[in-house]
Image (cartoon, one colour):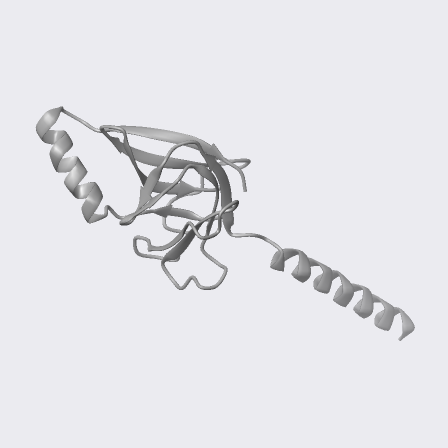
Length: 152
């Protein structure tokens, strides 16, 4: 009986430890963006950013994009359908990446890709980006993209 009680207590302690470790997993990606960029209809300055789909005030299908050094620069953006970290397949296991569409020097956030259990989303085109795309197509053939490495 004592062996059973000790085994049960050790098993319970192991489960509690694993549960608390799981609770600490962050669903965010952090990155330095060296240029001004647009998210939705908001223009954000260059700087260090966190992209988070789990912390308040986010809801389903939303991502908080916030400048770490200047928190007043933040935007809550709706992402394409699905739970925000399952929308796209995970990026490489150790690092994430940000993908920007670029039209004549203007950068628009297109994707936030992170490692497994992190955020992996596609940002829908805003009206400002649609206008930039129309103007760009009239001027040249195709837009370019910029990809930045990110950490979790």
